[in-house]
Image (cartoon, rainbow, N blue to C red; front, side, top):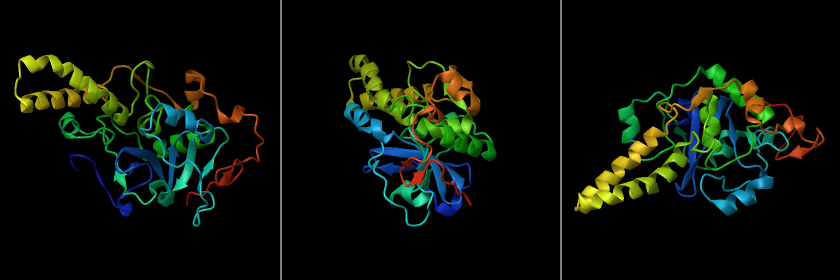
Length: 267
């Protein structure tokens, strides 16, 4: 396990693993759940809402939402109408990027040594069969509206792995990337008064880095007190999400490369 990320080979991942890849020259990472059969279930903004999201921020958003036909898997690109959860083959998910494995159940020491958020958590993962069940259920029923800071691709994958949700919707979500984006300026702001006590630039940098790491740790779902375990079947009811089943589109509407009644092939 590296200090920044955990790069793996394809033969090393197993069904139920949380995988990710980097986009835009390591500017952000895109996350999903490997469900076997060279398929990944992941979450991204609905095409209709993508423009408004990118107008607000360019972080943690998929860089190309226009699907291209997959020459290998006919069900690659399958998603339900009005849902951002989709099934992709591993090649289309990676988009020529490298493959990384998100780590669960790491010690606080390991977590704090990570130089970048969105690579690990102290929370424990549920069994692989439970993780895959959540991912496939959400593929059919959706994961609510995409939000860069509160409900993004990393939040989706972490929920599939742990079943944990944040109770306080005013705060940052489960995403380690979002925590890093918020934690860095926060650490710089909090460490500013210490400039009078620590005149050395190296000392200031050390204090700021320490506060940055602690701010990430404090928002990790493995140590937060405002998380609850929510069954995947109860998500829409408890959180008031709009499920794609309630949409007015016809069942045979073509979405992406698949259709709403296309078979999903995992093996």
